[in-house]
Image: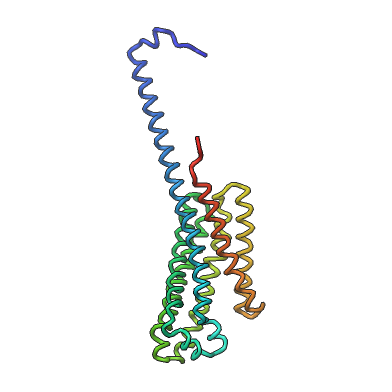
Length: 254
């Protein structure tokens, strides 16, 4: 170890120089600490938003099944009268649609947080996909609420058939964007370590494949029930990504 000569250590400028270097080092440490805290905050937002979105979507699917009023079935069968009978004063159906609107916004929040954290092209593309999906989902579910609260009590079946067809297709479009394309893109954003990344890419690819299957089901290329695989793969990715992100954001012991 080198030792400075006494003459240098006792010179008037030596103490000031050391003090200035210490101040610069302290400022650098504060900047690094602030950046780390911001990264942890962003990743926590992404993780919590993903978990909440997955939970809300799953709860909504359970409530939708209990509501026993499926618009797509009514549109495909042409029996809007039966749908109106089931939808009038159906509070479970109303709650379900509100929950799905909230879930679409949470997916956007999670995607945007991951994009800010990774600053990757895949992250920003995933955010764009989520924003477009939410932009389709919100008016679609509001249209469904209008069918339930306005058209159904008045029995306006002719117009409702057209609106119902558009709302049903809008629902599937939003679902494919939010639960298929967005997870696939975010899986490639590089927000996790290599081992977790591989698992999430595999789940994202499964979600993407299920989204393609849903699109094929809409055009009658594959049986309609096959399209519902997206309702399992999408939330599963949200749960996995949320848990992995929160674990990565947890502070490590010194």
